[in-house]
Image (tube, rainbow over the protein chains, first blue to last red):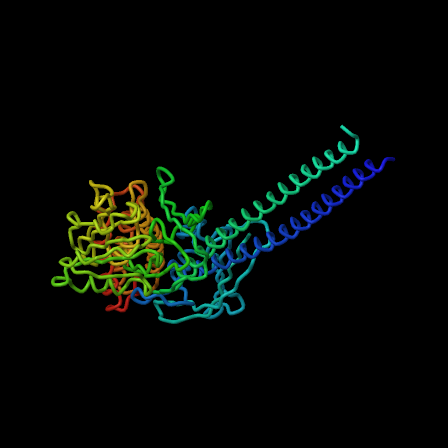
Length: 162
Length: 361
C-alpha cells in the first residue's frame, strides 16, 4: 500500500472513531436527560397531587363557617351529609368538579360521636377512580355539627390517581 | 498535475468536509440545548405561577412578591372556548401556554407583564358566604397612576389605594394636577381614574411610548358596584377600547380586579373572570341549597326554624338558578340579581342565628 493511501485510511479511521465517540457521548447525554425528565415528571405529578389535596381541604363546599368566616381544618357535618348523597353537588355537577379533583376519591371517616363506636360512619364524598396506584393523603379534621354546636373527630382520606 | 499535489488537495477537501460536518453537528447540539433550556425555563415559570396560584388560593389575604423567576414577558389571556361553556384563562410564557384548569381559580392580571418581580395578592370573595379567593397578579414593570378628586374622594378610594400590592409602583394625583405627571421611561403605564372622566386627558408626555403600553380604566361607582370603562393610548389621547360598552362590576374584589385587568379589542379578561366567579358561586350556592335540604330534616327544629329553612332554601335556589347560565347572561342584570339575593340571604342568616336555628353559613 502506498504512503498516501495509508494516510487517508488513518484519517478516515480517526474520523470514524471520533464520530463514534461523539455518538456515544450524545446517546449517554440523551439517556441522562430522559431519566431526569422522568424524575421531573414524577415530581410534577406529585406537586399536582398535593395541589389537588390543597384545593380539596380548602373547599368552601366542605368547610365550616361562622357568619361567613371560614374555619380551617373543620368540615361541616351537613355539607358532608349533603355531598355524600346521590344528589350531592359533587356528583350532580361532576363536569365542574372533575376539573378540580381530577381522578380522585374523597372519603371522610367520623371517628367520634358514632352510634356504634366499633363502626365509624363513612361518607364517600367524591369518587372518580382510575386503575393505577394512587397517592394517599390523610388529614385529621373536626366535623362540626351546627345544630348541636359540637365537634367530632374525623379523618379525611384523599386518594389522588396519576 | 503531479500525483503528490493531487493527494494534498484531496486531503484538504476531506479535512474541510469533515470540519464542516463536525461544525454543523456541534451547532445542532448547541441549538438543541438552547431550545431545551428555553423550554425548561418557560415550564419553570408556568409551573411556578400555577403552584403559587394554588397555594395563594388556599390562603387568606396574602400579599407576596415573587422574585425567583427569570426575566421574561408573561402574557395573560382569557377566551371563551365556544357556546355553552365558560371562559378559559391562560398564562403564556414564551411559546408555551399554561391553562388555568381549576375553574374556581379567579385570576386578574395585566395582559402582559414582565418578570422578574411579579406581585401577587389575594382577597376573599364572600357572596354572602365564602365562595373563592381572588388572585391579583401584576409586576413592578407596570407603573400605576391613580387620578382622583381628592377634595371629594370618600373612604372607598382610600380603601382601593390601601388594598393594592405592597410593592406596587403606584402614584396618586389629584385631577387638577395631571399636568405634573411625567414620563419615566416606563415599560408599561396604567392610569386609573376614580370617578373622573378621562375623555379630555392629555397624553402628550407619553407620546413616545407604544400605544399598547399605555392603558387606562375609568371607574364610575364605589366599592359596592358601578361601571368600568377601558381605554388605550392612541397618539396623545386615550380612546375607549370598546366605545359602546362599559362593564358592570359588583363589590370591592371585582373593583380591584378591574384595576389589574386589561380589556383589549380582542380579549375580555375582566368579563371572563367575572363569569368564572359567578359559575363558582352557582355551585357553592347549590351546595348550600343541598345542605339546607339536610338541615330541614333535623328533628326537634322549632316551627320558626323550619319556616326559615324553607325560605332560605328558596332564596339559595333563586341565587343558584340566576347564575346557572352565567356564560351567556348579561352581567349587569346578573349583578342586580346577585345583590338582591345576597342581601336577603344575609338577613335570613342573621335571623337564624338570633333565633338559635342552624346558621345558613
